[in-house]
Length: 341
Image (cartoon, rainbow, N blue to C red; front, side):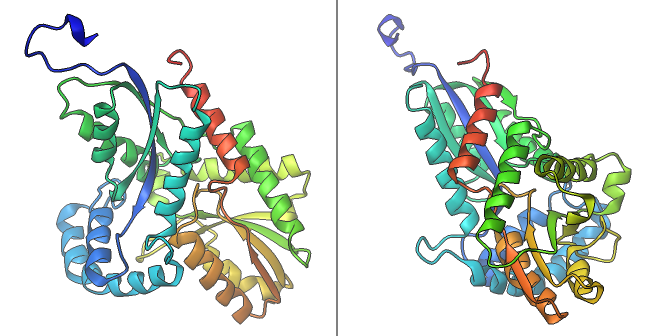
């Protein structure tokens, strides 16, 4: 192609298709300043915190960023991947990208990469890497099964911000929420079945704990709550379970505002008093294990449940980069690349 270009013309690389996996993000380390930088970027996002800036800014920069980094850093330290000296989220997401690239080994024109909405590698750097690789078409894949403005939308926003700066802008597609995709539902149900089969006890109840959000976001039209409830219902129906065998809760709330209920932590503390002494729990809204699953649910959740009189507690991991999980991701990507491949 470059043989026919006029002298001095910038070289043109062969046309390729980019797939960019987008996840939430992580601090680069567990120390105060690394966590503070991450939290400031995260909590400064108006998609995440809709409180008016004039009210939120003094709270964030005065109180939250003074004290929360120490606590969050200690929690990250409890689950930090010491082998890679990174957070599990980044390790797993990178592995997902590598395995997805391997799945497209026969499609030489497909380039897979990953990026984080907050922290590193940044979304901008991911878009730039794909553009430099010759991608004139990019599929953005926010790794959130259920749509929310606080997750899917803000991940796409960041990618669009990067695209605005490019003179030669690639064509772009975004992966829609796949909360009710039959493949996702089947793989999620399979993970529950296999997770329970590994236990030496039979759970009285299985809890699907989703990341929470202020109730006001739901009332303003965010579909996240409904999609979470539907995911669990479809999984229950796939498994052939009765309604009392599995339940939905919401985790990770902070502040005084009412969030989506029932709250995971309060549920875990109340169940033993109701005679539910053995449970298994999973977090379907997360595509990769992270601080919210490994520390908040797998560690702190167990402490809360057992401290309230529970007898057995098991955390079922996210789909992560398992063969079944990767097959589901590949299926979604190939479907969304229809017409490009």
